[in-house]
Image 1 (cartoon, one colour):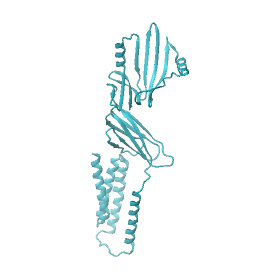
Image 2 (cartoon, one colour):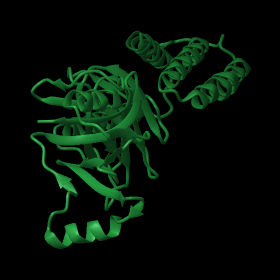
Image 3 (cartoon, one colour):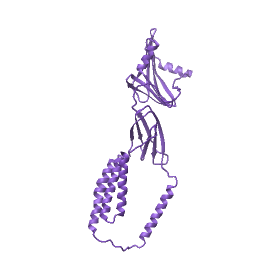
Length: 326
């Protein structure tokens, strides 16, 4: 639908602009200018620049063109146009200048233009509605997003932040940022998110990976193993990490620890946040001994590149989700 509106409005603008300079009657030219301005206003609406569209209609079409018509009516449109040219060489000069401008356009179009900055940001989605936002403090930047099928979704907003919500399939999404070229470049940031269902089975397409570890699966695994006095849970909800809590009471010795997992691309990052034995916090002592012996678990290698780790609440309770690709 957007393409239909764009082409219809564009046709109105082009036809109206041509009529402005080709119509013999000045009143007809002024009315064609009104149509042109209305077409431009529709294009502004398509770009979600509603204020500019209103200004286009109210100020230009509603005031300036009316002033043109007033002057035309004041001068009179029933008088025959004089064929006498007070400046005999102005038409030749106009044609010459037009030819020079056309030659410059053709010359520049055949050379490399400085189109500004271009940068890319990739995201591996597990499916659902993908949300992407571009924030920048400088001059105008545009954002286009390519989904896993290769379809390009171009932004239609003109201010920061540029936000888009696209319903798509799992796979690699790519955002391309374009900006006005300035010395030293301009700062910008792209943020991704998805509302993929917090649950389900492991996804492995050979390229895209999505592993889910829920509390229900942890309980089922402990029950199948016959372990007693042990409890392992995913705790809390976070968009960029997941916390695993362990508790055991074997032989009267209470032991608990928590580990926070995060994406330390290309590996899976882990931080040991708390260890207690019989209610005594020994986190500092254990971490310092692990560090001294070189047995830190701050980075866990996997057989794929980890793109994102988060925790959420799904049909099977709290869950830890790891998304990545090969």
